[in-house]
Amino acid sequence: MSRKPLIAGNWKMNCDAASAVTLARDVLQRTSRLRNVDIAVMPPFPLIPAVLRVLDGSPIGVGGQDVSAELAGAYTGETSASMLTSLGCGYVLAGHSERREYHLESDELVRRKVGRALDAGLIPIACVGEKLAERDAGETFSRIERQVTVGLGGLTPAEMARVVIAYEPVWAIGTGRTASPAQAEEVHEYIRNLLTTMYGSEIASATRILYGGSVKPGNARELMSQKDVDGALVGGASLSGEDFAAIAESAG
Ligand code: PEP
Image 1 (cartoon, protein in one colour):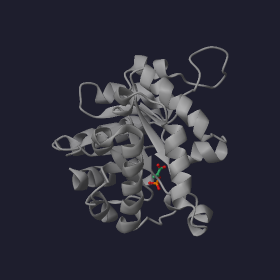
Image 2 (image 1 turned 60 degrees about the horizontal axis):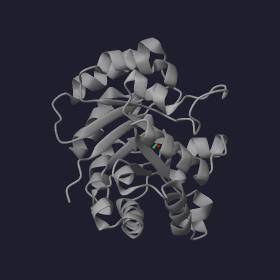
Image 3 (image 1 turned 30 degrees about the horizontal axis):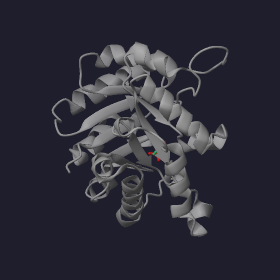
């Protein structure tokens, strides 16, 4: 099963209206000749309309960094899935480790967010990953198992077919410390086997599993060449059009 790689840039809480437009233009220009890779950027919520104006009509997708688990109503500060769809977003992150860490998001909450995203027609990029202490304690696979079975449990096959998973070892995010290609592949293969148990081999083999954690132009090619690594979720390096495009090139 050939899976088209996806390179997604998580801009986190960076940029302002002007620099977001500049960055989006730069990404557009530098990636315009890439055909064999899907590309998406996730700007902060208030900057999404400006970025969408730049990327309108281009193949580059735009997404939110988070989504509410609620439909609508008195939830101050929240952004609903349908708001993102109505703007023209196609993607949304769910359960990024910074949301889990700073906003105490549980696997159960992530599951609700994934459901809202799917109901609104978005592609959820569900993030999973173990902390360093969990890895050191030999709990990597049990942690991932819970995140996947709870965070992505009980979907219909048609829903699961639209989900993207990002494996992001927490100890590799923003630290400059990348999982080795073998470490990444080992967990990606585990996730795909888990999906086979949950949803069958057809869906498991079609699901894109991205790697995230200090992906840079210098390490992207080797990571992307692993059998079960289908692209990358890129944080820091996505703030440079040049680096982000180089990473996309190494995947496509
Ligand atoms: C991320 O936040 O999803 C991420 C992978 O960050 P970084 O590339 O900076 O490690």
